[in-house]
Image 1 (cartoon, rainbow, N blue to C red):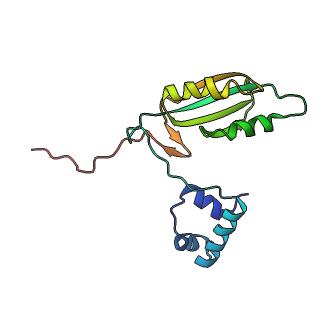
Image 2 (image 1 turned 180 degrees about the vertical axis):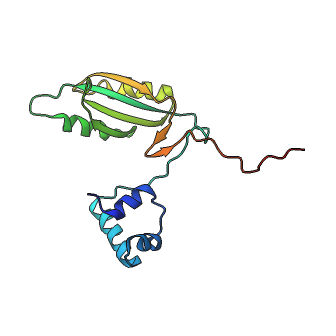
Length: 160
C-alpha cells in the first residue's frame, strides 16, 4: 500500500509540512525529510495545479491519440513509447489494451496544432502503423476533481 504521506500529498499538494506532521503524528522535520527523500528518489515526480481551462477561457484543446504500432524484431513497445514520450508536444504516454497499443495525450494546443503534430511528427515515426485522434470536448472530472459543479450563490434570496 502507498505511504499515507504520499496519499495526502497526491490529494492536496498544498498542505504544509506542519499540517502534514499533525495529520501523520510526525515532526515537521520528519515530514520534510520524507518528502525530500521521495523527491530525490523520483517517487514524487512533481506538483501541479488542476486548471479548468474552460473557465480560464483557454483557446486550446486536449487530444487523446491512440496508436497502433508494429515494433521491429528485437524492439518492443517500450522503445517506441520512449521515442514518442520524448516529443515535446506529448504530455503522457500509456501502453493500453484493446484495439490500439499506445495512447498519448497532447494538451494546450489548437486543433490545427494537434492535427499537424499527428500528420508531421507522430504518423511518420517508424513502427507507427495508424493513429486515431480523439479530442476531449468537455471535462466532467479529472484526477478526482469535479469540473461540472455549479457555483453556489451565497447572497441569499430577498423578497419584497
